[in-house]
Image (tube, rainbow, N blue to C red; front, side):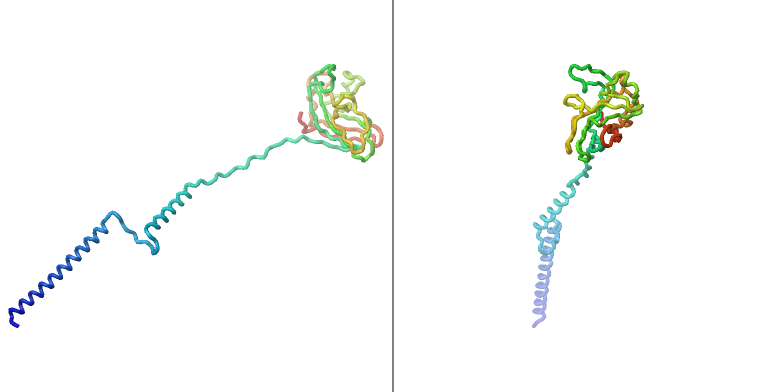
Length: 256
Protein backbone atom coordinates (compact mmCIF):
# COMPACT_ATOMS: atom_id res chain seq x y z
CA UNK A 1 0.00 0.00 0.00
CA UNK A 2 1.26 3.43 -0.86
CA UNK A 3 1.94 6.03 1.73
CA UNK A 4 -0.93 8.16 0.44
CA UNK A 5 -3.49 5.40 0.96
CA UNK A 6 -2.25 4.69 4.50
CA UNK A 7 -2.57 8.35 5.43
CA UNK A 8 -6.14 8.51 4.13
CA UNK A 9 -7.08 5.33 6.03
CA UNK A 10 -5.61 6.66 9.27
CA UNK A 11 -7.46 9.92 8.88
CA UNK A 12 -10.75 8.02 8.34
CA UNK A 13 -10.21 5.94 11.47
CA UNK A 14 -9.46 9.03 13.54
CA UNK A 15 -12.63 10.68 12.24
CA UNK A 16 -14.74 7.65 13.21
CA UNK A 17 -13.23 7.51 16.69
CA UNK A 18 -13.77 11.22 17.14
CA UNK A 19 -17.39 10.91 16.01
CA UNK A 20 -18.02 8.09 18.46
CA UNK A 21 -16.42 10.10 21.24
CA UNK A 22 -18.57 13.12 20.47
CA UNK A 23 -21.71 10.97 20.37
CA UNK A 24 -20.91 9.49 23.78
CA UNK A 25 -20.19 12.92 25.17
CA UNK A 26 -23.47 14.36 23.94
CA UNK A 27 -25.40 11.34 25.23
CA UNK A 28 -23.85 11.69 28.69
CA UNK A 29 -24.56 15.38 28.72
CA UNK A 30 -28.22 14.84 27.83
CA UNK A 31 -28.59 12.20 30.54
CA UNK A 32 -27.03 14.44 33.15
CA UNK A 33 -29.32 17.25 32.17
CA UNK A 34 -32.41 15.02 32.43
CA UNK A 35 -31.30 13.71 35.80
CA UNK A 36 -30.60 17.19 37.03
CA UNK A 37 -34.05 18.31 36.02
CA UNK A 38 -35.62 15.44 37.96
CA UNK A 39 -33.60 16.08 41.09
CA UNK A 40 -34.08 19.84 41.04
CA UNK A 41 -37.85 19.68 40.66
CA UNK A 42 -40.36 20.75 43.39
CA UNK A 43 -41.10 17.17 44.48
CA UNK A 44 -38.55 15.29 46.56
CA UNK A 45 -38.93 11.55 46.40
CA UNK A 46 -38.40 9.52 49.57
CA UNK A 47 -37.17 5.97 49.54
CA UNK A 48 -39.87 3.76 51.08
CA UNK A 49 -39.54 0.38 52.79
CA UNK A 50 -40.29 -2.71 50.71
CA UNK A 51 -44.03 -3.39 50.31
CA UNK A 52 -45.05 0.19 51.16
CA UNK A 53 -46.43 2.45 48.46
CA UNK A 54 -46.74 6.17 48.58
CA UNK A 55 -50.53 5.82 48.98
CA UNK A 56 -50.40 3.45 51.96
CA UNK A 57 -47.61 5.42 53.56
CA UNK A 58 -49.78 8.55 53.46
CA UNK A 59 -52.71 6.70 55.02
CA UNK A 60 -50.51 5.35 57.79
CA UNK A 61 -49.11 8.79 58.54
CA UNK A 62 -52.61 10.30 58.50
CA UNK A 63 -54.01 7.64 60.82
CA UNK A 64 -51.12 8.00 63.26
CA UNK A 65 -51.47 11.77 63.31
CA UNK A 66 -55.22 11.52 63.84
CA UNK A 67 -54.79 9.02 66.67
CA UNK A 68 -52.11 11.16 68.30
CA UNK A 69 -54.26 14.25 67.98
CA UNK A 70 -57.28 12.43 69.46
CA UNK A 71 -55.22 11.19 72.38
CA UNK A 72 -53.81 14.61 72.98
CA UNK A 73 -57.18 16.34 72.91
CA UNK A 74 -59.11 13.71 74.89
CA UNK A 75 -59.87 15.21 78.31
CA UNK A 76 -59.10 13.28 81.46
CA UNK A 77 -62.23 12.82 83.63
CA UNK A 78 -62.10 15.09 86.64
CA UNK A 79 -61.76 13.35 89.97
CA UNK A 80 -65.13 13.22 91.65
CA UNK A 81 -65.41 14.07 95.32
CA UNK A 82 -67.91 11.84 97.14
CA UNK A 83 -70.90 13.72 98.46
CA UNK A 84 -70.84 14.19 102.23
CA UNK A 85 -72.98 11.78 104.11
CA UNK A 86 -76.25 13.17 105.17
CA UNK A 87 -76.36 13.98 108.80
CA UNK A 88 -79.35 12.87 110.73
CA UNK A 89 -80.32 13.72 114.26
CA UNK A 90 -81.93 10.78 116.01
CA UNK A 91 -84.20 11.20 119.00
CA UNK A 92 -83.16 9.20 122.05
CA UNK A 93 -85.37 6.33 123.16
CA UNK A 94 -84.61 6.06 126.84
CA UNK A 95 -85.91 2.70 128.11
CA UNK A 96 -86.04 1.03 131.51
CA UNK A 97 -87.75 -2.06 132.97
CA UNK A 98 -89.49 -2.06 136.33
CA UNK A 99 -91.56 -4.86 137.89
CA UNK A 100 -92.55 -6.49 134.60
CA UNK A 101 -93.14 -3.25 132.68
CA UNK A 102 -90.85 -1.71 130.07
CA UNK A 103 -91.13 2.07 129.90
CA UNK A 104 -89.85 4.02 126.90
CA UNK A 105 -89.77 7.82 126.59
CA UNK A 106 -91.03 8.78 123.13
CA UNK A 107 -90.93 12.58 123.39
CA UNK A 108 -89.98 15.16 126.00
CA UNK A 109 -91.10 18.65 125.00
CA UNK A 110 -91.22 21.92 126.88
CA UNK A 111 -94.33 23.93 125.95
CA UNK A 112 -94.99 27.45 127.24
CA UNK A 113 -98.70 26.90 127.82
CA UNK A 114 -100.94 24.24 129.37
CA UNK A 115 -102.99 24.00 126.16
CA UNK A 116 -102.34 20.27 125.64
CA UNK A 117 -103.98 19.29 128.97
CA UNK A 118 -107.12 21.44 129.00
CA UNK A 119 -110.52 20.84 127.44
CA UNK A 120 -112.19 23.31 125.10
CA UNK A 121 -113.72 25.06 128.10
CA UNK A 122 -110.55 25.04 130.17
CA UNK A 123 -108.47 28.10 130.95
CA UNK A 124 -105.22 28.32 129.03
CA UNK A 125 -102.40 29.39 131.32
CA UNK A 126 -98.95 30.48 130.11
CA UNK A 127 -95.95 29.15 131.96
CA UNK A 128 -93.02 26.74 131.82
CA UNK A 129 -94.07 23.10 131.41
CA UNK A 130 -92.57 19.72 130.58
CA UNK A 131 -94.57 17.12 128.63
CA UNK A 132 -93.22 13.56 128.60
CA UNK A 133 -94.84 11.02 126.27
CA UNK A 134 -94.08 7.36 126.95
CA UNK A 135 -95.11 3.78 126.28
CA UNK A 136 -95.61 0.96 128.77
CA UNK A 137 -95.11 -2.64 127.64
CA UNK A 138 -95.95 -5.69 129.78
CA UNK A 139 -92.95 -7.98 129.34
CA UNK A 140 -94.69 -10.90 131.11
CA UNK A 141 -92.15 -11.06 133.91
CA UNK A 142 -94.80 -10.36 136.56
CA UNK A 143 -98.16 -11.33 135.01
CA UNK A 144 -100.75 -8.57 134.86
CA UNK A 145 -99.49 -5.03 135.43
CA UNK A 146 -101.59 -2.53 137.38
CA UNK A 147 -100.55 0.96 136.31
CA UNK A 148 -102.22 2.45 139.39
CA UNK A 149 -99.32 1.00 141.40
CA UNK A 150 -96.74 3.22 139.70
CA UNK A 151 -95.77 6.83 140.34
CA UNK A 152 -94.29 9.04 137.60
CA UNK A 153 -91.83 11.65 138.80
CA UNK A 154 -89.39 14.39 137.77
CA UNK A 155 -86.08 15.07 139.51
CA UNK A 156 -84.04 18.21 138.80
CA UNK A 157 -81.96 20.57 140.93
CA UNK A 158 -84.07 23.47 139.59
CA UNK A 159 -87.32 22.07 141.01
CA UNK A 160 -88.66 23.71 144.18
CA UNK A 161 -91.08 20.99 145.26
CA UNK A 162 -92.40 22.81 148.31
CA UNK A 163 -94.00 25.56 146.17
CA UNK A 164 -96.57 23.34 144.46
CA UNK A 165 -99.15 23.27 147.24
CA UNK A 166 -99.43 27.07 147.04
CA UNK A 167 -100.93 26.82 143.56
CA UNK A 168 -102.30 23.27 143.26
CA UNK A 169 -103.19 22.50 146.87
CA UNK A 170 -103.66 18.77 147.36
CA UNK A 171 -104.28 18.07 143.65
CA UNK A 172 -101.02 16.79 142.27
CA UNK A 173 -102.00 16.18 138.64
CA UNK A 174 -99.23 18.43 137.32
CA UNK A 175 -96.91 18.39 140.29
CA UNK A 176 -96.88 17.26 143.92
CA UNK A 177 -94.16 17.25 146.54
CA UNK A 178 -91.96 14.12 146.77
CA UNK A 179 -88.64 15.55 147.92
CA UNK A 180 -86.84 18.91 147.82
CA UNK A 181 -86.11 18.73 144.08
CA UNK A 182 -88.52 15.97 143.09
CA UNK A 183 -92.21 16.06 142.16
CA UNK A 184 -94.76 13.52 140.95
CA UNK A 185 -97.53 13.91 138.35
CA UNK A 186 -100.41 11.85 136.94
CA UNK A 187 -100.13 9.55 133.92
CA UNK A 188 -102.71 10.83 131.40
CA UNK A 189 -104.20 9.60 128.14
CA UNK A 190 -104.07 11.79 125.03
CA UNK A 191 -107.48 10.49 123.95
CA UNK A 192 -109.48 11.95 126.85
CA UNK A 193 -106.93 13.59 129.17
CA UNK A 194 -108.04 11.25 131.96
CA UNK A 195 -105.75 9.41 134.41
CA UNK A 196 -104.43 6.07 133.18
CA UNK A 197 -104.93 3.52 135.97
CA UNK A 198 -105.84 0.23 134.32
CA UNK A 199 -104.39 -3.25 134.12
CA UNK A 200 -102.13 -4.25 131.25
CA UNK A 201 -102.15 -7.79 129.84
CA UNK A 202 -98.97 -9.72 129.12
CA UNK A 203 -97.61 -8.59 125.74
CA UNK A 204 -99.83 -5.50 125.61
CA UNK A 205 -98.19 -2.18 124.78
CA UNK A 206 -99.78 1.02 126.08
CA UNK A 207 -99.17 4.04 123.84
CA UNK A 208 -100.34 7.66 123.61
CA UNK A 209 -99.96 8.31 127.30
CA UNK A 210 -98.04 11.18 128.89
CA UNK A 211 -97.13 13.07 132.05
CA UNK A 212 -97.38 16.87 132.27
CA UNK A 213 -95.24 18.77 134.78
CA UNK A 214 -95.54 22.45 135.74
CA UNK A 215 -91.94 23.56 136.20
CA UNK A 216 -92.73 26.93 137.79
CA UNK A 217 -96.10 26.99 139.59
CA UNK A 218 -95.69 30.50 141.07
CA UNK A 219 -94.97 32.44 137.83
CA UNK A 220 -95.25 32.14 134.08
CA UNK A 221 -91.52 32.87 133.68
CA UNK A 222 -89.18 30.09 132.51
CA UNK A 223 -87.48 28.05 135.23
CA UNK A 224 -83.83 28.54 134.25
CA UNK A 225 -82.71 25.99 136.84
CA UNK A 226 -84.39 23.10 135.00
CA UNK A 227 -82.83 21.73 131.83
CA UNK A 228 -83.24 18.40 130.09
CA UNK A 229 -79.59 17.68 130.69
CA UNK A 230 -80.06 17.91 134.46
CA UNK A 231 -83.47 16.25 134.61
CA UNK A 232 -84.42 12.62 135.17
CA UNK A 233 -87.77 10.98 134.60
CA UNK A 234 -88.44 8.42 137.33
CA UNK A 235 -90.91 5.54 137.51
CA UNK A 236 -91.49 4.42 141.10
CA UNK A 237 -93.36 1.28 142.25
CA UNK A 238 -95.70 2.44 145.04
CA UNK A 239 -97.54 -0.79 145.89
CA UNK A 240 -97.68 -4.53 145.27
CA UNK A 241 -94.74 -6.75 144.46
CA UNK A 242 -91.42 -4.87 144.20
CA UNK A 243 -92.90 -1.78 145.87
CA UNK A 244 -90.27 0.82 146.75
CA UNK A 245 -88.18 0.13 143.67
CA UNK A 246 -87.64 2.63 140.87
CA UNK A 247 -85.89 3.32 137.56
CA UNK A 248 -84.60 6.65 136.24
CA UNK A 249 -84.21 7.81 132.62
CA UNK A 250 -82.32 10.91 131.50
CA UNK A 251 -84.10 13.49 129.36
CA UNK A 252 -80.86 14.70 127.77
CA UNK A 253 -80.93 14.86 123.98
CA UNK A 254 -84.70 15.10 123.52
CA UNK A 255 -85.58 18.10 121.30
CA UNK A 256 -88.32 20.54 122.25
